[in-house]
Image (tube, rainbow, N blue to C red):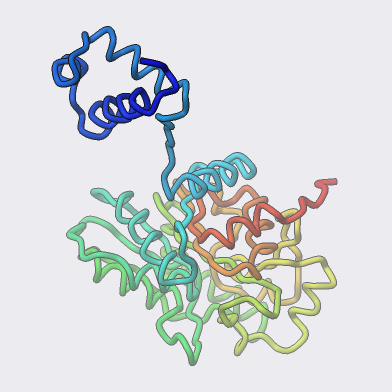
Length: 320
């Protein structure tokens, strides 16, 4: 029997299919074709060498897992979760909700920022029984016509309802007319208690605002900020908003006339929270997310594939 004959190929195919597709052992195959187990082993080796047997190890998640690893390495993150093959809030919201649910345990303290991204996560949260968990806001109230429930206190109530936990809230707006009013509000015992809880959270959930006009979500503070604040921030190099504050491409705070009027957690205190997850989608937000991740204030990200690729493609501004 010649190695190149059709019969030889037919034998190699039969033995290979029985072994790799049917799961038959070499003794069984040998008894079927009239050869010893050692001969079957040699036939399988020949089939591999001739390319009759070709192994392929792959999974749809492979490229996604690579993106997650690159994000973690680039920004020193504890975790990165990327939606596989899908994009937008319908993909990212439920994925982030699962990440939050996995981290909830007895007496977990959760703090929430405002925004459409955080709202998408809360809306996707499964019903749980975590009665000892507490949810507290990071910022004051933000009214928005399109998303009236997207301010942090409303989201805290909604999340607490989902997990059967308790929540804290305060009724002070996030942006006040002037700095003295904001200073008085920040000294209110109810506000102090809520924000101190937020700073000591085990888990925090935030979104990032973009300065890009094509960013997918409307800026929730737009009805509270007079025209010109964004331009003032842009002149200072701002590319992102985090908890109402502006960040430049290096992740550094850009002072503006808005900051003294804000009521909420200082972004610098995010670094002291156990796990701070940023949730976002949309390639237009890539520069803002790149800056926020570079700040060192966030430990994890949940996003989609197009956004993850855009973040990784963003050029790194020098630190000096």
